[in-house]
Amino acid sequence: MNSGCVEEIVIVGGGLAGASAACILAEAGRPVLLLERDAEPRHKVCGEFLSIEAQTYLARLGVDLDGLGASRISRLRLVRKRGATEVCLPFVARGLSRKVLDEALLFQARSRGARIVRGEPVRSISVDRSAAQIEVDAGGPIIADSVFLATGKHDVRGVKRPTANTTGDLIGFKLHYRLTDDQQRALQSFVEVILFSGGYAGLQMIEQDIANLCLVVSRQRFEELGRRWDPLIADMADECPHLAERLQGAQPLYTRPLSIFQIPYGFLHAPDESEPQGLYRLGDQVGVIPSFTGEGTSIALHSGCLAAAIHLSHGRASSIFHHRVRSDIRRSIRLASTLNRVVRHAAGQQAAFHLSRIWPDAMRHVTTLTRVQEIAMTRALTAS
Ligand SMILES: Cc1cc2nc3c(=O)[nH]c(=O)nc-3n(C[C@H](O)[C@H](O)[C@H](O)COP(=O)(O)OP(=O)(O)OC[C@H]3O[C@@H](n4cnc5c(N)ncnc54)[C@H](O)[C@@H]3O)c2cc1C
Image 1 (cartoon, protein in one colour):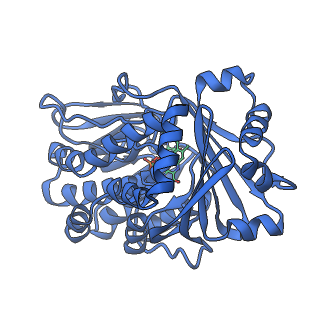
Image 2 (cartoon, rainbow, N blue to C red):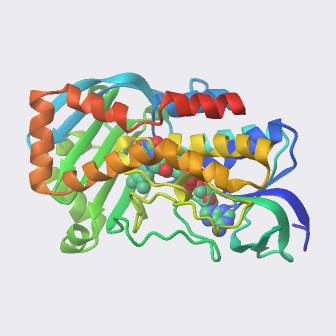
């Protein structure tokens, strides 16, 4: 990294939001520097469920999900205690690990001419009326005309999100498993949403016959269980024989689950007139939708593509982007946050499960209403 260099556009964070913006900007011939904290590809806490909207963006950006071996998911099974109910999804979803997916998108950005520097955490950012100053470990500050903040759930000093009013008491976990052949067959083409005391889990196949178990649990429940993974899984399996059956004889593929604390579900960036121009907030930095919707990645991709398109036509006028993206994702985040509050509690879980039994299409409606709408996608895709 050169010390004290001057750049036109710097993207901070090489997840789906940052890499998608890098693809569009580089494709249009703009000089882009992307700084990614991690030196190597790594697993991330995520259910790894790709909705049809996420797939549309990924296809536009050149990512070949078939070539990467993504699984196909056409049905949803809702499981609670000893009961289960099923419905067809309104689309065929895909399952692919974030380690493979994020790398494939970064590859697309690089091949379009974006400069990608890995192992470079940004320490702080300050933005004034004319430029942004980005502090990194190696060398002096980078001065950028515009900065795209795409650091996911991690805040950066100087540009932190105000997340005080969000649901911050949920903890996310993820672990990949090799299931027995019988259980793999039983899970094939399903995403299973499992409701349990204090949280919910998603289980589905991804590439190479791997199953992903991803869950969120309240901090209180996790503390009651001694703040340890094994008792948590044992307790869930006790409550839900279906999960016990799935995990019987399963081999965990890493020694400990990945975890993430204080997920600010429901966060939605509120544009403010005093906010400096030239700072574009993408992905989880602009809005965090509860995980059970499986829509976080499409919001990340939508915001990345839309921000790049607006930058190409309006330059540093980031407030245009923030107003637009807020109106595109507000309804989904609000509805999902309300449902998230409901399914965290036993009575809410029971009511949701009962409703889905007597009216299975309710689940289909939820999966439709919490998605990025087609009109918003068309705007982002045609502009880019
Ligand atoms: C439990 C859980 C389950 C989920 N399941 C699903 C699902 O099944 N389907 C779905 O669509 N969505 C799901 N999501 C949501 C989805 O994972 C996120 O919305 C999505 O990853 C956001 O993308 P992003 O690019 O904003 O952030 P990220 O993917 O987190 O990428 C941010 C990048 O920035 C880098 N970074 C961070 N700080 C710095 C720094 N200071 N300097 C440089 N780089 C930095 C990180 O290393 C990372 O690579 C889930 C989320 C959770 C918590």
